[in-house]
Amino acid sequence: MTTSAEVAMIHPLGPTTVEDWLAEAQPSDGSRLELMLGYLYMTPPPGGPHQYAAGELFVFLRNALRSAGRRDLHVLPAVAVRISTAFRTGVIPDVAVVNVDFNHTSFAPEDLVLAVEVWSHGNTREERETKIAGYAAARVPYLWIVELPNGRPARFEGYRLGESGYRQEVFANSGETVIAPGPISVEVDTDALR
Image 1 (cartoon, one colour):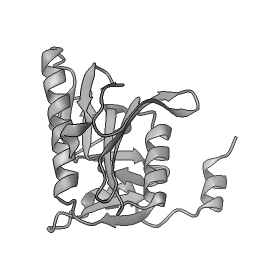
Image 2: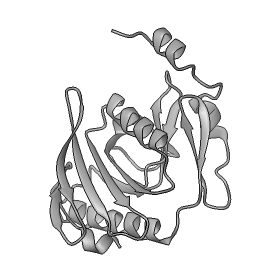
Image 3: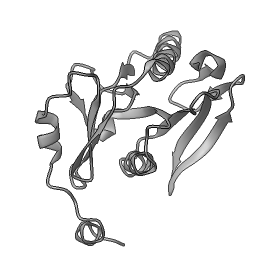
Image 4: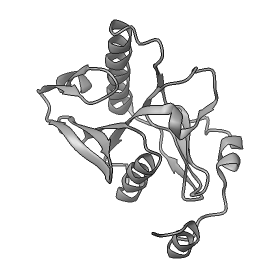
């Protein structure tokens, strides 16, 4: 088993703590400031296609929660999640489902039931891998990924956390409608994401 000290030696953590990150003001231009292994990481402001897809997923989730009468779960757009204090990681999923009162400025990893990430060509491989690993290490039960390839139809992937990480339960190309894994049954129409 690898200890925290051994991991830090393999990949030195940056100087920024989760508390430092939470104290930072988010950029006024819509960019998102996240924390990856102790380093501040800024992504450009999301464009129209990204925001549209995230908005549709928010609506799918909100409607499904309401239909199921699940008042114990809340869907939120773009909230801060303190993934790991030890590994100095804090992220802002595009959409989140939490199992606590939503009157917070940030959420603990155990509050997060589902994380939704909408990715386009601007999201680096390192960012994607760090976020997926962070969600898995934090034991977030469900993860949805929407891929918006430049100029091509959207793809949807739905994951459920297993013993050794996420396993894909659903994959859908544009034009397909699927039942996504999650705390409730949610139908996702991939055509509605573009």
